[in-house]
Length: 527
Image (cartoon, rainbow, N blue to C red):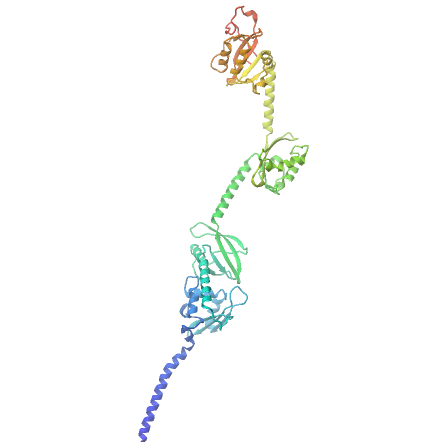
């Protein structure tokens, strides 16, 4: 009986030992991995990442959603850093020191543009576990599914809007590091020869101004111009870049055109002064200073039109009008008077110079004044007028009647003897009277006896025949006898001369109008 009891006891001990061993085999591994169990539970609502170095080993559903929602393309480690650096600028440095510290607890500051975030990072069995939580979240709150879906749809719309924006958009933290960007910025970074890494490459070097113009020169490509607008965001800035290549090109074309005009104006001998709608001098050329003797410093100071005219008046470079105020007002009212005419005057200055001043109204109220020194031209005109008057006086001193015709047969000159003989004032010729040899021949024919001489004279004056040396005898209706001769002058002009016919040289039956070969040609001062 005792032996049976011993055998049963030994059997029970063996069973208990076996069960204990089996229990230890099951319990001990579970205890070793007890701290990793929340990560493996697919039903957990915490945001947990498990990394082996920079390789993602596992993640909770919310953690995977966070990685998938990142606009950055790259490994999960870089996507997570891109998210964390917005809340913790020095997160990469702190995670590097995790092997020495063993555990890292961080909480983002309050009052920023981003919601608060708590981070717990610790080493577990050689792996890095990162847990993210919202310290202000209400754990007992239950989100309505419809509200959650609407929020998700709005978030997706915002992501799509930013992602499809053709203009680069990015965020820089306080250390000037690019911690977020849209697809256009990443594309531009690749075009600029930058390598995509974390932090993202800085394509634009921002200054402190809110609005700035930045040029980028991609390798082997033409420069690209952008207008960048920045706005404060968290501890850094959010920047928006708009391409302005067409605008810069247009400005360059306008600048070249302006330079061309400036060079052209600089070489003009005519002084140019352009006043804007406020009547301030906006543009002038060097000739203006030379002609008016105004100091360039005064002109560069953008004087008003009234100051400009007053300076000219002080330097006696403007004629002194009887009513200077009204004259000045007339000049400033050019815009209103442009419909009926333009301002143009000749200024005879006390120093003997003569300026021709022209005013031209321009759109939007601008005004241009042109100053031209016409002293030589006016002097030449005066000399020409004096020569004409002298020539007229000489012709008037000739006793015979003289009429000079141009190459086309038009009357250009007649002397006083001609006016007295034919009762025909040459001044009336240019006021609608007879001015052509045909009209004058008809006029002469009506005042003389019938003769074919006038047709021959007209033919000679027009250059279709040669004048006889002796001329034609003509008898007027009042009985006077005349001798008409045609003399060729330089330049195709001709002179018709009427002189008293010597009655003694004609027989009583002499046929008037027939050329007289026996009468010698007399020379005059005009021949």
